[in-house]
Amino acid sequence: MRCEEKYAELYGRAPESISFCGYRIAPLGAHIDHQFGHILGCSIDKGIHIAYGRKKSGICELNSINFPGKRAQFHVNEIPEEKVGDWADHCRGAAKMLGEKYPLRTGISGVIEGELPIGGLSSSASVIIAFISALAAVNHIRLGDWELIMMAKAAENRYVGVNCGKLDQACEVLGRKDQWLFLDCADDTASLISAPEKMKPAGFAIFFSGLERSLANSAYNLRQDECKAAAYTLLAHAHLPYGKFADTRLREVPRPVFDQYKDRLPENFRKRAEHFFGEDARVIHGVRAWQNGNLDEFGRLVFESGASSIMNYECGCPELIRLYEILKETEGVYGGRFSGAGFKGCCLAVIDPEKQEDILRTVEQKYLKAYPGLEGKYMSAVCSLADGVGARL
Image (tube, rainbow, N blue to C red; front, side, top):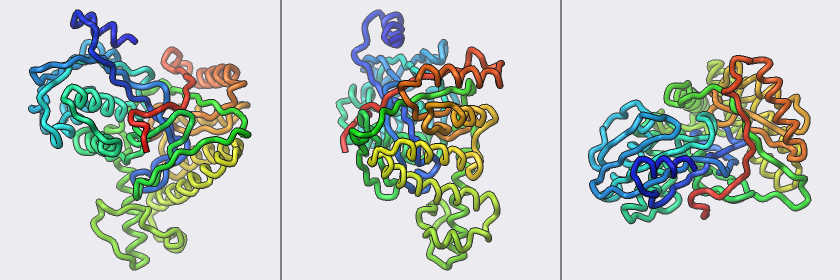
């Protein structure tokens, strides 16, 4: 890993340890974790590495392979109340959340390295989790899995300013090799879903559009407000109890209520709710299809999820939408959709591993024909479902 080499170059010694957190993929359950829906996802074998050593002064001195020449430095007990606006805000937020619960005396010198381009794989959550894990280790703090998940989520929500749900953090902590994490975001009930032996082989591929994005600067937070507004309005029309707007979720709305009153909603609110109810059902059906070894049905649901993200949730950009269309027309791709929020970034696909090389070549040729200016920025990668940081349920 380059981070180990860079650490030795900067500090004249080998790092004491490496903290790793895999990225996540989630073929079903897009955009509904923050509305307390069901999700299906997992950690993968590629992610964020931090080569680090302890600093008894309490200073955190961080360098990034992906953002060269932009060192960040802060004391674990003197973190700015407001985010600075650079790549290290995720680490500051992580340290702040850990320090609110535990006394911190030791900082770290670290070099951070991300294996794949930013956008669509929740690299932000991976950085936060890897950094919390490193900082906790040097301060002799042992965190439980859900403690780590909620602390990482709080760093994004309260410090970075992204109103994410818990999908990313849960997948990256609780995911297990060759299994999906099935999570109910309303009560945090979690289980691991395995494929039956009779199911034909499934591979996983990621296709980067060549466009990076930051959720803090996207329409991500606006979409959540639209979902809450839809829920609030539906509950009011049905004369059902409701509380504060900020605490309202579409999961509180019975499906028959949506069916009865959806025509009274503004179009944008109706579309967001339509996506929630459809996607939540797709997760349940997808779990059943995977457990039954029906890979074709599982893939169909993933493609359907992608279509709803475009039509109802209205995320995506021309480049990502074209990638999705190419996946739909490529032989050997069972299913595909935007990965993550879908505001630039990448697409994921469930593929036939025997056709892997043809799929990667075909998608690249068609995509770069449509967007030749992105040659050198577009890339693809194959990944596997892997153990998360905690890997305990």
